[in-house]
Amino acid sequence: MNGSDLLCEGVRALLRSAAGCVPAVGLGVVRRDGSAHLEVEYVDAYGATAYRAGGDAVAAAFRPGQTEHRRVEASELEAHAAGLVESRLLLTGLPDHVRTQPRVQCVVTLPTGAAEPSVLFVALAAADALTASQIDALESLAACVPDYTRPLAAAYDEVDLLRRLEAVEQLLPAFFHAHDAAGIYDRLSEIQNDVLRFDFAALGILSDDLERVDVYARTVSDAPFPESGPMPFPRVQTDAWLYRIVDDLTAHPAERDHPVVDAGGRTSIRVAVRLDDRILAALNFTSRDAAPYTAVDLAVTRRIAEYAALGADAFIATFDWGQPQRDIMRSLELFAERVVPHFADGRRLLVRRVREVALAGEENEHVAGTFTREFVHGVGNGVYYPVPQHLQKCFAYLGYQTGDLPLTEAAAAETVALPIYPELTDAQQDYVVGTIASFFKDRS
Image 1 (cartoon, rainbow, N blue to C red):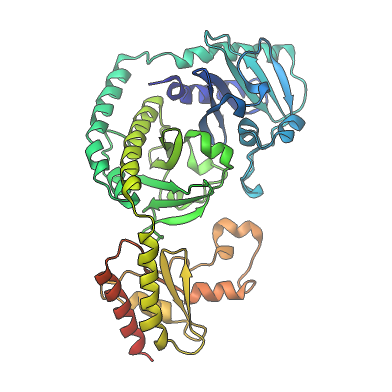
Image 2 (image 1 turned 120 degrees about the vertical axis):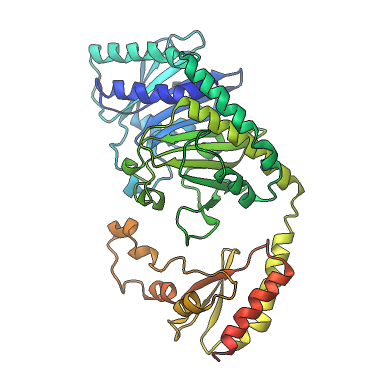
């Protein structure tokens, strides 16, 4: 277990202490990791997060080596808003409606006095100058940082860690036998709770440009698998990201309305799946248990991520990235040849996200319901978005009403998703298209 693992508990404890003497909304530690890299641990209402990046990625104001406290004004942060630490402090990339915590007005940095130089920084919600007693209190907290990077004090914690890591080792062969991301997700879902407590697991596969993520999760039974979407964080953060721990999802400004919270999720632990300093994916384990995840839990989760990275690298290295496109094109050609001729006037074929085919009709609003009730010949289908996004609870703050976006509402009422994805064999593609063609032929 390294200092980064141990500090996941330290920064949370230090923030609670700091909030008792100054208007602190966040607290972090920057420490050296070898001669060329720095690690940043930071906690606020959005979770305890860690990053590892080259020294040049961290602004001079936050680098270890200073000998006295200093103040960083909000204007300095905004002038370098694309920086690693600054973007985390300013919540860059998050929409305005989830930025509910007070804005950072200034940051105070202090040397920790550790044998290996490090810096404590405290984000404040007020621009007022600190009193001498407040500075003394923060200096006392800075002096405590080394205590949170020492090895586990309790023997039972060390034994528990070793037992759980040994159990994780048994997972390695299973990861090597995974042939795709869905296979890795299935292996993760089989992890026992005595190794890592969780009720929901998710695997997010990142795009090469780190702008999008395909999330494999089964929190909601009829949700897309995987579900694709944009990354909410800037690349400078994603590229350096190590982990994020959220102690209370019900209080998280950006996630308290997510389906996993509605399903009872209370705490979560997320770690990067990395290989050779390259981030491939993210693991997310969520528990209904309200007890926060610990440093031992983090060490176990990061070991799982290391093994998942080896499995992912194995199938990525041998994967024919052109074959999925060829498979999808074959399915589309079959749809065009055998299904489209049966469409009534005004009907159209919509290709969505290269993972599903949706059939919609201007005059046949009952089609989606008919498919769901009657189209049961071994062909999966679903209505993923029966409520259009502008009418969903999480977007209620926008003030939209039924009728404001009629085309969107019509699409939601008329659309059904059908399987078209690379893993289907030619025979399965033929069966899916043939069954759908028969469905429309009988109704034409």
